[in-house]
Length: 425
Image (cartoon, rainbow, N blue to C red; front, side, top):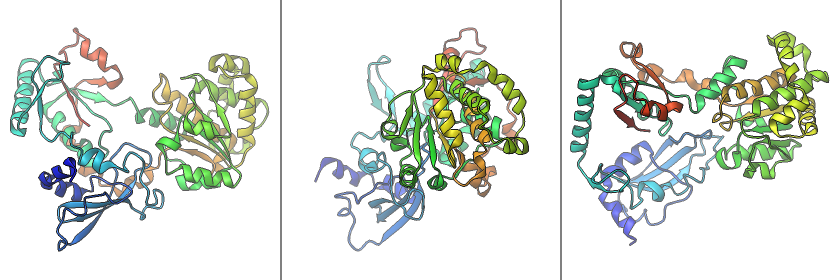
């Protein structure tokens, strides 16, 4: 028996929790696991969803026997993920749950920082020492000297932030402004569309001109790619807008490669070409949009020569891309996180979101913009059970922007200075 499989026998309590919450799945039966449970023990199937911060959110089907997980597959009850999991999850049991190097007990640094020296301590000691240190900081400087730092490590509503949020609000710690990722998208697209819900993933099969803007679905949105390929077989052209030659860009029909952080300029340049050549859907604009005259005035600054200089693209590339997009029907822009991690990322999302409104692409099935869909299902969730209670939600403690973390940690003039950074998720 392999050493790491032998170790499984010492982790029965953990496995029982894992099985009940479906904490691990993969594509195929895990070799060697099925022999660990007695044949007389009944099997049980548990369904759940992946906790990773991912646009696919795979559905899981986990088969257990006693306290052991004997089979991991994607659930075919979800038509989108359709029984398949991504590469990150295909060997998850051995990569994480049963990995011989998995850390199961708290480790306390026993040498200088950076030395890599740690010693195991009990959970009781770890909790006690952390609590005592936080109490000391609160007594000496106040709770605002403590900064919680977390984001999308666990997307489960309970494990993700409900308890952590309550704890840090209760003690009065500094608040974290989570601006590094999804909030950028929400701010930009909401400024244009009023909300973020776009075209459903399944409807991309009806699109005939698909622009993958700042996304690499072959790698990071794998369940969408087969639908894109289905659209391509039906005649769709696939265009990728990305500064680097991703796997998706390499197999697209056209790769537009602007300099990093110049997406706003490219979108504005496309809009100017569309309007100058009369390719906009004026009826749609008049009925369903506002601010068109202000946009036209703003676009005077974005002639082809200026945009080409800003983006590093050839003028003909910009103009032909704009014409193709405006004339195609139905046309769809798929945005993801690529533009979030740049200065003025929200402005880029706002500008790109204007394109389908300008061309009236929203009129047709498979046309418009695809981004998020969570708002469609949000009303089915009991948000009150995980949101901060009213007694804690009206916090007046200071807010620290997570993208300025380095500045905040090193600012000796901040009152109080940050003495504890509590990192989780």
